[in-house]
Image (cartoon, rainbow, N blue to C red; front, side, top):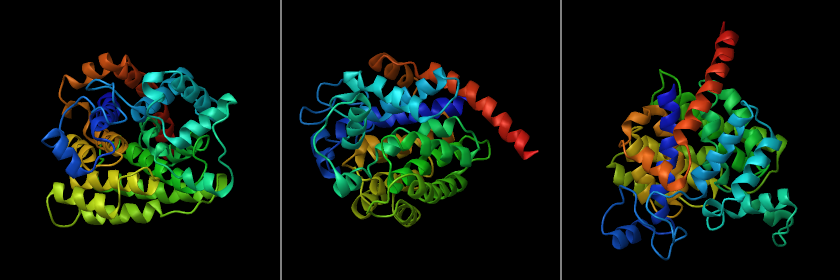
Length: 346
């Protein structure tokens, strides 16, 4: 179990740090600037959000997930809105992760938690703008905390998502990722049942989001996921499928682009963690977020052993975080929660 948890955390962190230099560029622009497909940590260009970072440094994506998971572990596995808000405020005080990278929906919510003003965003337009992929980027540890208990992972994902993204589309995307990671934790997990869990999570999350949050306009996360998986199961190389997913599904800030793209790349690469991450890094647009989510799902499925041995110490040193220690803390809670599931099953 520890190897799967560490794999999920490491996959998300690798996707974030490797995707930071390519964010905001198209695939053609990535190849033109770097001269090759990006397959390792690179220093972000001067015209990117990551300008000033060194190779291997994180952005908002995994760092947000890390802080939320850390606070949940510090509270012995309790998951509620107060703990989520506490974690997000703590995270916002770390400028290297927050100031240049945080998305508009999350920034607006944290300003609200702090009692600060952040412009005049009212009414319908604010709701539509909040159907963003920030809900999915931070959610993978919730799946790790609920091994095999997909419904509890979905319920906890709703709790974690609503303080910042209180609409059915964002909740749907978050629940898709959490459910897939939860299923990937099990010994019998495979590509098929992990994707099925993700689709189930997206559908159930949409329903729960409509009840607990707001109904906003936008494309269905579930339907876009199905389209992305269809492309991934079609003909062509993984690179060709990556291009088609980017063109037809999208890989941008909207949750109905980034989450389906992550699942499509996961399938196109047959669940291979490093290949899924590399596709997310090179698909273009919001590369760090897509690669973070694809890496979390595939990393959980395959375990930490599939990553180069120098990745973990490099990420921990460059970002001054303890990924392996967090994995141990999550494992303790996950083992306890798994016992509850086993008892319920009997």
